Length: 208
Image 1 (tube, rainbow, N blue to C red):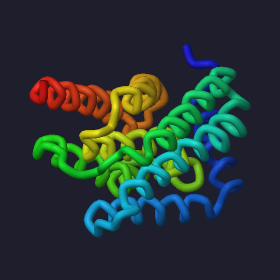
Image 2 (image 1 turned 180 degrees about the vertical axis):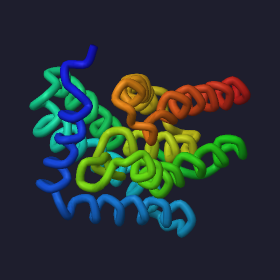
Image 3 (image 1 turned 90 degrees about the vertical axis):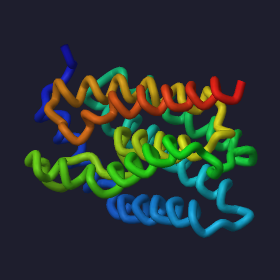
Image 4 (image 1 turned 120 degrees about the horizontal axis):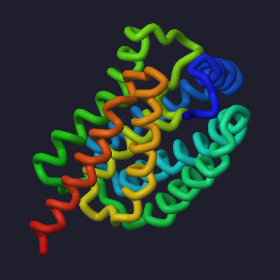
């Protein structure tokens, strides 16, 4: 049993989106920059992509979980710590991450996840009757950030296992809560976590 109702859950998004505007625009622009840097390669591309991801996790942990979601869910403080921890790990690994050289299967899944997180996700939400501002948005809320992260990490064969751990945990938390709260755009989280971790495991086995 969740400690809040669906109405309270979406009311948090409404207050949050109104309070942090125009952060959503900057987050979308940052996400676009990250995707462009996958194709327009520069010596700073990989580090910039990692820093963009770290910024999304840090912002979501502090601003969404810590300042807003915690008002209706006491576990949000724990979630905030996990998201800040993921940001710290991304910052630590940024000099070593290379978002290139992934297997064809991982690249295909990555493209689908990035496209879904950035474009399809809000469309599914609106089709389900979730209108702005009472809806999760790309780059500033947990579930689309997690989907986007899986998409990018799959492109980085150098990404160590710990970088998958917190996104995978959130895919289980967010995906199961989405079913209980009727947030259909978040349902793919459960599959995304399992598929992403499974693909990375298969790749590592093939290298060994």
